[in-house]
Image 1 (spheres, one colour):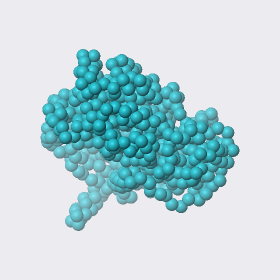
Image 2 (cartoon, helix red, strand yellow; image 1 turned 90 degrees about the vertical axis):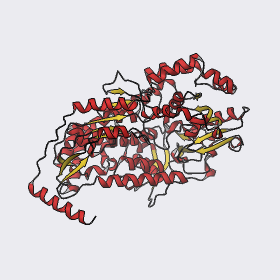
Image 3 (cartoon, rainbow, N blue to C red; image 1 turned 180 degrees about the vertical axis):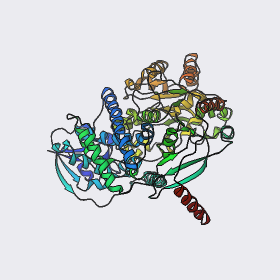
Image 4 (spheres, rainbow, N blue to C red; image 1 turned 30 degrees about the vertical axis):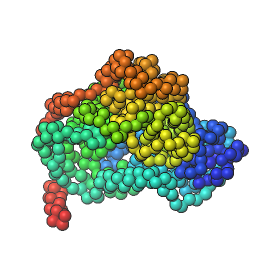
Length: 623
């Protein structure tokens, strides 16, 4: 009988070559300095791989299950909080968290279900205490960065689901958790935990009812990190409005009402007898459900009504605004949108908003509206285009921006799923081997902001890492975007679109990712990119391009064939305009015309309003 290892703390390096050992991939091999993934045979890894068809099927299943649970929760939370909100309110507030939790647990359940026969395994008997979190964000970050929490998730599934029949378990008690092993992982983890904890605290409810009136801008626009428009800000928010909200207080006997709500979910959810995951998840929903939803500062009444453009982040303000007739639009803030047959981030943001502003592409099939707009991010490159070629001191012959897969448990975006980690590292190794053989003096690889549980250089051939030609630099993407003579990437990340805009050569090379992952519109684009040699799906075509001289690369890139395709893509999927602000202002004004501008007064018990005013005036004296 084989032994399955779930955590990097369960085995010594000498055990890795034992053919009787099986490792949960990549979880059991992360946060260590002595595990080289590429050298391990696939037979030693529990690495459940979804085909394109299987992935799309599971994606649709999660879509349906997410909506089923939210439909049930809407009425239950109205009763719990003694309020009367529509399903739009609860969808806006709950959907991102519910979807994240489902994906996390289901992805690991599928992976563990691929165990063949029966295996020995060591599990955490007190695993539940490591899995209860206030938000899905905290849960996701802890599972993906803390090996003990990741181990606890596997333990809980193997102890409480039908998969317990696949293991011969030995249980141990664990008291402490360890912080991430690598420096930048630790810094990122601590930063996210701090920010998310503050956000949760601001949403925490008060036991006493109160009334508050506050100024708020009628239009909120987030265009992307570092992008700001003073013109739009001055034009749209010249008149700050006063809004009011009446909070009736968190429920009395909260714990009893919480137990009743959980019991009602388990009773009312129509279980499919043939679906063992649903039975497991619903039976243990109190373990996985974000605890913040039982302690929220929700208005019983308010007149908050604004127009917002940005990332739907499940805020109470956003949900309340939509409840009162306000509008919320998502906005594309990177790639992987409108590209794949299934993409969880796009699905979530489009389902939790009134429309989605894209970088020019339109979706005429889905019932979820898209609004093609010029990309503020890409358009800023037009304004700076005159200075892009002037910094000769930073020139790099070949730049490599390598998009990584997720660590441990990924969100449902197939191009970044953890089961591709070995292939992705092998691909980078292959690219470096091919480039180092060229008569080039400088190859610069942009490393990710944090390690994601492994030492990248350890995973590559040491002859490549020690080469004087190859340099590694954290977050060198912008430097390479502007200053590399040739840019290489493994996927259609933001750098691909940026290089199209500034009209500089880029090659995409990926020999393992199936083109069937792209949707119908992108398949046409992909076919054209393969035909002209920008997208390479085999080593031979990629190597032929690399052998070209600098002059030959420029001649190829500036050829009519490439430039016509580039112009077509800029119009379809990477719309840029120096006057993009006008387009946004026109769109926003049109939406404001659809919104009723009047702000209705809300009725509040006189005693609550009086006490609230006295409280806030006294509080103001001490601040």
